[in-house]
Length: 94
Image (cartoon, rainbow, N blue to C red; front, top):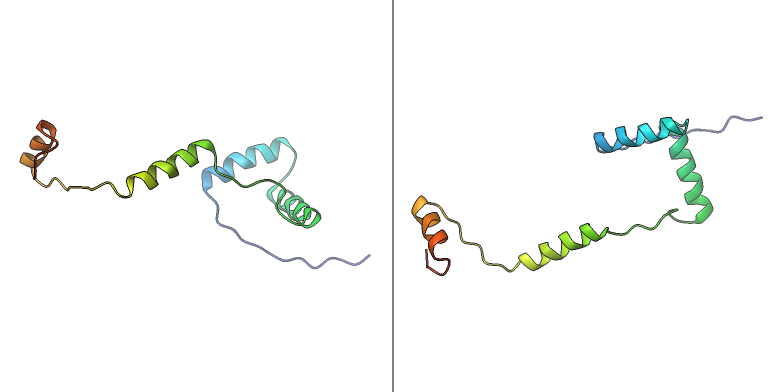
């Protein structure tokens, strides 16, 4: 039986995310290498990712809010007087 040639891959991933995932892998009796091999095999078998990538409702709401705020004019309040005036009358020209 021949030995399959291996390829090393390296990835950067959020430390907390990796630690949380490792807890699950350990409970399943798996390590990162086994999980990544299973993922790659499923990608090849499915001809794509084995899950749907989409934003959560919270991510969609944050994106919508960010887009809505893009055209809101911003005035920099650089003095205490400006800040006090802003709290007293938001229509005052600073």
